[in-house]
Length: 270
Image (cartoon, rainbow, N blue to C red; front, side, top):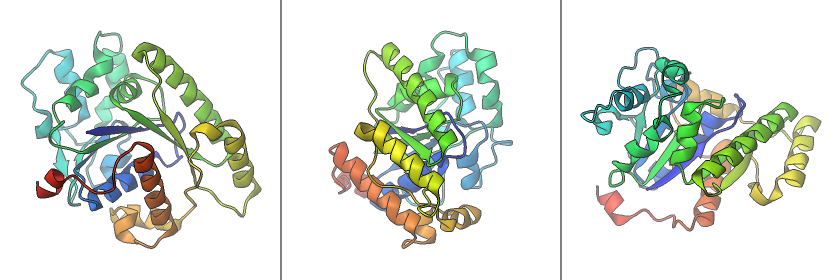
């Protein structure tokens, strides 16, 4: 089971879109995919019409069970279907916003998600974690659990500052993990017509070339329309520029991680 975390310490850079689209493209290949919403705002959950304000079976339950040493909670009982074949969701709850205040100082809270996912090894081929844009117990959990970090960065100046903060956090987590977490910077919302986008992309290439995906995710109104319909963009419009960009990104990531594009026979059979 491969675990990818999608994170940046700035909002509005395309984190949820990246998680949804990559997850759905993997599911279309026959992979068994779990999307895990770690953002209390619940954008990923809302995408699939799951209300984070009314979600009792959510990521929050995992932390509550861990804090209370409750070993009876079944992680699988919290997972929901999305309406897309091979794609499941562990939704968020707005109550997750209180976790840092309630549990942040309690020991072991940084490994809740890692321990929960260990029990799902035989059920999923990929897990994609969508993070909140701030450092806290939820982001720490996501970085501790994953094997690769994906950092969407909107091609504009303020988003580059968010990337700097994210990389500082990554260094801190790396020291506690005792190993460097591989990461990929993904330029998003690129508009070749604007100087701001082209300058920001140039800066990314100058400063982060070693970890930068060599293509871009363009601005595409089809993302907004797909979200409004509650569908991933590859199902809403298979020929959209955004669909093609993320399909290219997925092929690159699979090659980078040595993962064949062909799904496991057991995954398809199940």
